[in-house]
Image (cartoon, rainbow, N blue to C red; front, side):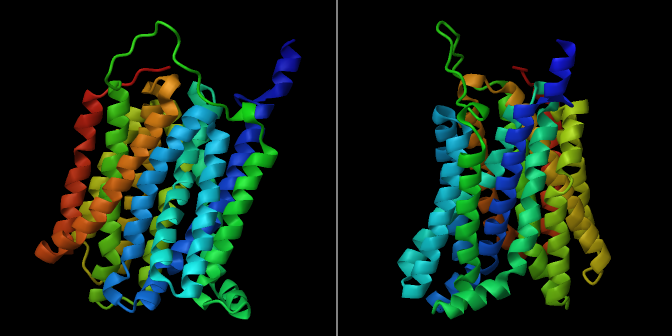
Length: 406
C-alpha cells in the first residue's frame, strides 16, 4: 500500500497532477511565443495603417481593454466548465484575434485591425490566468510552486517570438501580405497549438470545474479579507510596474541612450518579471503569501527610489532598478495569488480570480496613462519615487489583511 502510493506521488504531486502541470507548461510556452511576437509589431502596424504616430499607442490601449474583458469572461467560463475549456477558449480567442489583425492589415481596413487587437488582448490574458490552474493542481502546501512553474514557462516562448520577426516577415511577404503581419501569423499558429495541447493532452477531470456551493452553506455577501488583500497587492504592483516601465524608455532616449541600450534594460526587466517565479512560489509556500507580498512592497519601493535617484546617464543603475521592479512585481503576483487562492471559497474561486485579473488590467491601463502625465509635470524621478511610495502601501495592507485557508 505504502509502496504503491509512493510510486504514484512524487514531491507532493500525483502522476496525473504532474502530467497536467506539464501540459499547462507546454501550452504556456507556445502562448508566450504568440504573445511576444504579436506585441512586438502591434504599434508599428497601427502607425503604418492609420498614418499617425500619435495613434501608435492605440493598440496597447485596446490590448489592455481586451485583457480586462477576457479575464472576467474566461474566469466565469473556468468556473462553470473547468479550467481546461476556459484556457483552451482563451488561446483560441487569441488565435482568432491574431488572424483578424493579419486580415485587417492585408485589407488595409483600420476598423477590423483595431477590433482584432481588442480580441487578441482578450485572449492573451490566458497566460496569466493559467497560474491559477497550476495552483489548483497542487496540494495547498505546494500551490505557490505550481503557480510559479506555470508562469516560468511563459517567457521561454516569449524569448523565441520576437527573434522570429524577420523570418515570419519574409513568409508574409512571400504570401503577398504586409511584412509586419508575419509575427501575427506566428501568433495565430502558436495559440492554436496551445489550445490543442490543452484539449488533446489533458483530460477534463485533470482541470475540472470547481464544486458548487453545498446546500445550506452560508453566503456572507462580502469577500474574505484574504481575497481583498491578495487582489490589492497584485493590482498595486501592476500599476507601479507599468507606470515606471512605460516611461523608462522615454527617459533613457531623452538622455542619449541608444535603442539597443533601451532594449537591453527592458529585456532584463521582462526576464526579472517571470524568471524568479519558481523561487517566489517556493517562498509563498514556505513563509506564506502575506510575507512574500510584504517583501514585494519593499522591493518595489527600492526599485522606484533607485530609478528616481540614478543618474540619467547610468545604464547599470537604471538596469538594476528595472530588474528590481520586475522582481518586486513577481513577488507581488505570486504572494497575492497565494493569498487570494487560499481565501477564495472553492465554489466561486475561478470567477473571483478572473475579477482580480480584471483589476490588474485596469490598473495597468491606469498606470500607463497616468505615467505620462506625472512625468510631464514633474519628470521621471518624481514618477519613479511616487510609484515606489505607492508600493510601500502594500505592507500595511498585508499586515491588516488575513487569509482563510480552504
